[in-house]
Length: 428
Ligand SMILES: Cc1cc2nc3c(=O)[nH]c(=O)nc-3n(C[C@H](O)[C@H](O)[C@H](O)COP(=O)(O)O)c2cc1C
Image (tube, rainbow, N blue to C red):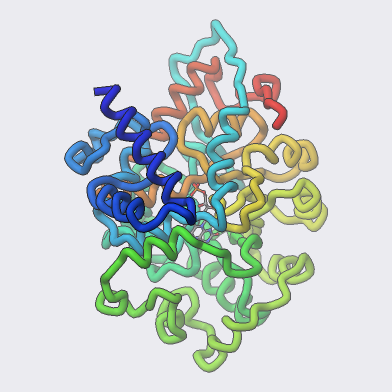
């Protein structure tokens, strides 16, 4: 069986390699197309012994051994264009791969003979306690994965008492998501791109509806080149507008303005605004910060210099993130820049981190480096696409279990026992 899987995997990798060559023609593409119809085309790293045909995929969330099991099922169940939206990175996806590969360069030295019989993985952020250091990243994609959508994600997050950040671009209101969580506050994420007055208005509504923290995502000054999305969209023969108003090229003005968080944008202004974004700079985000009582966290910090400015200008926190390899293909993983950022921030504000986290062991490496919490995005979207809310619940359960197991293995009864002295990073 192992031999069979290995040769089948090698065959597919070989075909993919050949297909990438402009000299090898359509025969290989045809072979790949047949292959793609049988099995999901991309096997993520630890699944090399995973199922290679649809019959071998997990049939229920409980069968999953790791979060990776859900990606294959989501690939099978979700329309290719929707799956492509989640799968894509930018350009050659070097950054997306670095987000995973760089965990192998981070080594952790476990401590022995400590009582780890009851690992406590809770964190406190801005005075609120969460049962797990793993948080739900904002993503405007839940409804495209499953009808359970953002409400399903919220219920799953509540089941494990995880912090959740809701994207402003979703079509579910923050109050509906909070209601699904029995009133637990949810952080609100926004791309500040609509001009000061309008953005201030969107923020004020979120504040009135009970969001305690505003997350401003600052890593998307322009639309990225999402080739995987484009290629998978070409495989999708459905007519987008049969099911939803949003055409493949993005939302129409009417659709955008029907989304609950954007209702304050005057319709006649949306088109102009969306085609000519604001001048997004430090001054702009500082003015927004001063216009709200919410805590304000900047998402998308990679350079230590920007982390220093974030502290200098009095922001309440930051998320070290390259948007899951979607905000430019610089090749810089989040985990590789974390130690330098921790060094400049010096504990003055909390550092959250995301991009490429898939295992409890990944989570504790970042916490040992000095992060307070770790975000995941694609794993819960895979869970959602595969099995709806139940899939998200299981993804989060796996990560909670893996995190506690990793803590015990590292000799850390609580998260404060994870310290930089445990970390050795290989030089690249
Ligand atoms: C489909 C999709 C949609 C996303 N939408 C948003 C968004 O609306 N706002 C945002 O700040 N980040 C967005 N992100 C980025 C995530 O919040 C997060 O930074 C990143 O995906 C984490 O990496 P991971 O997917 O490897 O876990 C999105 C990511 C994906 C995959």
